[in-house]
Amino acid sequence: MTKIQCAIALGSNLGDSLDILEKTLQIFDQLPEIHLKSHSQWYQTAPIGPPQPDYLNGCAILETQLVPDKLLQTLLNIEQQSGRVRRERWGPRTLDLDLLLYGDLILKTDTLQIPHPRMTQRGFVLVPLAEIAPNWVHPVTKKAIIQLLDGVDCSGVSLYQPN
Ligand code: ROI
Image 1 (cartoon, helix red, strand yellow):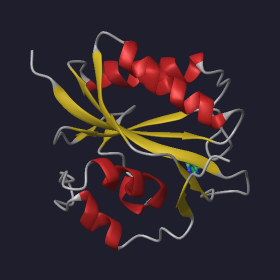
Image 2 (cartoon, helix red, strand yellow):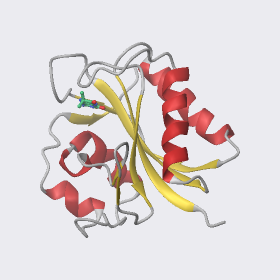
Image 3 (cartoon, helix red, strand yellow):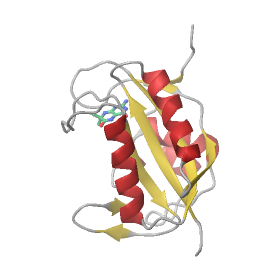
Image 4 (cartoon, helix red, strand yellow):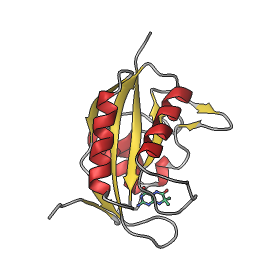
């Protein structure tokens, strides 16, 4: 079976976000069906949507043989393990995992849209993704990630500095 490279966005603004995100990378690495190829640094980002604490955001590149549905299910399971009780649409969360890109697949079902429909507008996704996959061509816009960054306001996104 062929292995597909996928891009995942990670975010947290509730609880010990740094610890939650680092543990999530470890979980990725321990799953037999997923290989963690690379991950970005963490970024502190101003919340998009209603007022709430700043987020920590980052991105990871995974290699997997899981079909998109199974990969999504795996991501949801990991979210739940990290203590997320329920998903309020724009509310704070202990862990949010979004499937951004699955090779060059374009897919739209009732439960899953790939590429992620809002990734091209979000600095908190594009900045970390450009760090690890600047030349990945977004299959819908046909633009490389680094090009997509051009049109997006990234003023609320800065490298996280632990103190
Ligand atoms: N805002 C930022 N900065 N980072 C996120 O991960 C994030 N996730 C969300 C909403 C509520 C849209 N805002 C966000 O789901």
